[in-house]
Image (tube, rainbow, N blue to C red; front, side, top):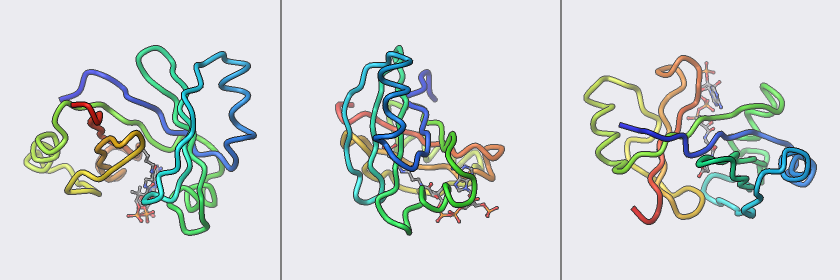
Length: 135
Ligand code: CMX
């Protein structure tokens, strides 16, 4: 179904505070920031090989990432696997009995299509599937 990790999401309190470690110390290529209003987050992408680190900062107190920070503090939030056809991947997972959070794709960063699987179905690892906008 997937052959590539698109990105690893890391929840942070502040992009400005977190960025220098990834960009200046680790030397990853900073690709810019973007607000994903529907998800109530501001994200920064840093390229590492064919994948990315996605830093996630909540934009409001009721953002899912704000809830995550409250409960766990800063840290790894989700893994995102890239798929060619997200609708098809979701149908396949449903048929395989995997519990989904999103039954239908929604818009993520870079205008990609994304869907989350329920962490209870994936051993506690919040898993996102994403389909690039140009697919
Ligand atoms: N890792 C592991 N478990 C998690 C989790 C995470 N990051 N976030 C939530 N959970 C757990 C919760 O602890 C909860 O467990 P319990 O039922 O045992 O309490 C369960 O999952 C449900 O969580 P919830 O917050 O109560 O449920 P919601 O349906 O409101 O939200 C979720 C679920 C995971 C989709 C949401 O919290 C979330 O994180 N959404 C993603 C936001 C995001 O990253 N957006 C950026 C996308 C941008 C892009 O990549 O393009």
